[in-house]
Image (cartoon, rainbow, N blue to C red):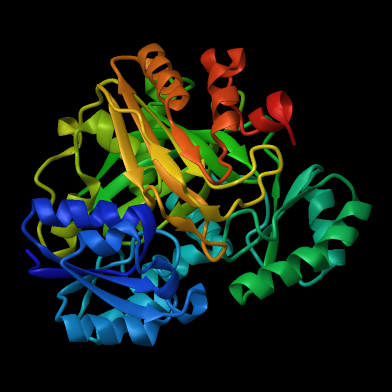
Length: 446
């Protein structure tokens, strides 16, 4: 096993990785920007190194500086967390060239899955169902309109690179295609350096359900059940649960097997997630692959009893999985909500100083925190400040625990999305399991 790991990230995921490293007796080093010098992860790590100014481009995305810190700290490996450099193929390649283990898949795999168009092609060849659409980059709006006519409106105009809803838009007519194409291509190019666009058929009233996989370097791949991630605002997940209330055992098994097939088709190694859209007839379609640890990995841990970060470290250190598919248990129900520093009415970020911070405790409650009382929430980073995870023997108990926990979650000095989360959890549609991706627009607000 590794002697020392550098965590090339910030916030709650940096603290999460440090916690597992400590449990395994692995020394930790972390990085921090000028804005994060008092952050919890800085105090948790054995060593902490300043990486640059407050903006991500001059700190958490500064590959040369991070590799310099890795050498200075004598780290054996780098854990990239999620976001930031976690799916940056160039970073993974440079780690490999520097003789530092990148805790994740190979640079080649990251690159291939980072292009949604290439990923579609790979999955089609592997026999994994994909959303009807095209698997090549569109030259211009005219070609997009011709493709949309063949597929049938409505269609989703999508950027091949990146994510987070950037460069993505539903279009319902040729006129809308011409209006939307260049603007979305420019946004994709500005954010990701790649303006390639493609089109998929819109799946009406879908569920967003993803399969967690683990794969070692010896050909062993398992799926760790599913996560329902359909409650979203602006294509960003806010509530996730495991298992899904929608899947029957037959569909669940087919999706798990498809995810394993997808991972094996590209020689995948480490933790990864295959995301699917599931329609009203339980047909499922490949959406994308996340070649990293997911924000919502916690709920998989809660229902399986596994520590996914520990599994990542073992695989990266060259160990084989010490369990097979039949050993993966599924016990209870878990729900995660993301706590954002944002106005619950507008979803706009709400930076400021947290003057009071008190969190609920009790059976079945887990916290992943990026802040504490006195923390300054800056405008430089993603506004997620914490995750609240609850587990119950069944979904009803988990929902009741979550409702009670949110009622006792106390944050002052900034606005948070807690009122919106309370509205979701209390809504009869959520209680009944009616959780499609249109939930927020249909029941709450656009």
